[in-house]
Image 1 (cartoon, rainbow, N blue to C red):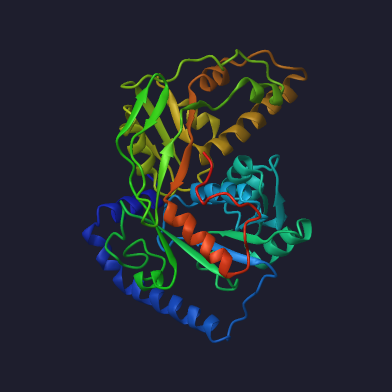
Image 2: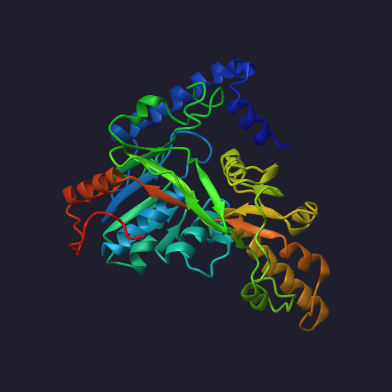
Length: 392
């Protein structure tokens, strides 16, 4: 178990020994207070983009459903005829190659896993760089008609000015012991929620798996600023198309049967809050062998091979990296043999057991109403006249 996983579990169970770290939290709190004040007073310079900037982030460490939320918002804005772009730090990517535009052919180890997922799901214009000004400049240089820039996880990046702030709060996890790092998992104090739009990510329950399709029984409260993550049907991770791209002709896998409800599965997750993923699999009726990894973990195929006998189910974010590994491994095998491969038993067996559980963020009507009003106040109005409800 890594140190990150150990501390995360301690935060989840509110371990008593964490209070020994309180002096460090006090120092951390003082530093972030002084830093924010310095930006507010103009002692530190901040960048104003020539387009409207909407920041989506959280005040806690770990996943809160931010990436699925961004994907849903981008799709909604695209449907409304609003020119939207996305920027990100590109965590896990190669900073020496940034700023960089993200395309559907971009590699996760270059631009980061979450940017790859966002672009693959939406086709949105996107740029990555730890320096958000450089990311915005790169994005607008390639797409000068963008009206709205969504900044992924830039809440604490005060060097970038913003027009809208949405803070995602995991309602199930709450705020733990309500302490700052490292005693608790808060990046900023609870007072940071004031004057921002707070979206509460609520736990989804009452799911039923029937005839291989999901029946989504829970609905969000339309009058509250809430969201839920709805699991979509399981998908085979390595499909025939992926095999063809790598040059590796393997046994076809597209007709494999879905893992059955009640069966044992390996749940493999390298996201900020893996327990939510495991709980979702359990709610769907699987008996889950849990394999939590640190957020943005760099998997290896050999690592996945150790999980034998049962299907392996991963998150969409992890699937992006595993697909890239698959292509890379098969290209290496092809290069070593000097010809097109016919089959590799180890990789074929793994591909037949790898599944991904996609999720979609469902927002309450109040969220879309708030967004429409905020954009209208900033002079951004949809070119369409249809109602507020997003299309399904």
